[in-house]
Image (cartoon, rainbow, N blue to C red):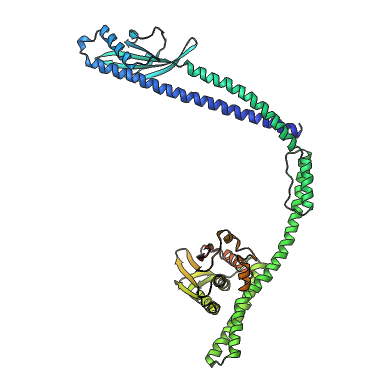
Length: 472
């Protein structure tokens, strides 16, 4: 069978089946709901008949409960009910008819089903009519009475049959219209050769994500699948080449970015030695600082190379004092903050972070450096460290310019800068948060960023303990 006819017959059959099932269900449900309402109403009417009859009978003394009196009483009760739709009968015993308000006899066996003083009902067919019959049993002074009420519900069944007739007409019309629509749509869908040609053209023009739609196992479907396989393989090779070039570029830029902070410190202390009169103790301190930052720079170079080339493998993690770590961060960032009169408040609880020291120093100095760039003269930075049961949490908050909500998820992209002019003016390259994201991933940590324009930014990082850390 051709693909055209497969789609045509499949959709026609599906629409016919769905609408048929839905229509039958809808009509059946409507009929069932109407029947439940009739049963509820009929049961209520019969109970009212029973209650009124028993109340009046109990008001009579035993001496006056003759058949004539009981018949008159039943007639009075039924007259007071004033419901012309119902047929009422009163029996003494199973077959002793005392009173009826209609000559239309309905034969049934409901009385044999009654136990004690309960009620039963049945839908009874009499000729071309249908009746809903209720029978209740009452025992008064040792005598058994059966109270019967019946209602003609033929109209309910006729209404259901009318719905079925109308729905059959609607279904025929629907199938006719649907067949025409499906025929046109199927004809359009089978134009897959044209679509495949268009996809091939777009791929040749540089849209490497373009793929052909596969509609089946016919010749066109096989051709489309072969084209997609070829496109996937070619696209994979292009992505591999692009990734290799981007990784090398990211490495060069990231390495240069990370050199900035220690080099600034080294140049600053070297300039002090060169231009200022210093005591021997101050000279030794400055020299030691230059030496320690030079060693850190050497170590950091290898760490960054390992971070990008080996994808974070074989780091030697160990517990690090959070107080000592963040104190070193404070010292490293102090001079840059002093130039803008920025106050950095450290509130750090004693605890340990399981990780690699140089990477963690790079992480937190990047956070503070980014906060510095976002702050005006005289701004404030807060760094909090809190010991948790399962690890250690660090929060860095500033009251700077903040950023729009829609920009937050983009800041870890390489070279992305929310405010390019300000970032370039402050010496940024848009790689700091990319490196931070990778360092956090290496440590198996969780982090979140919240920011509001004009109010500032808060970065929260949670480092898990040694048992749950993602580090080696």
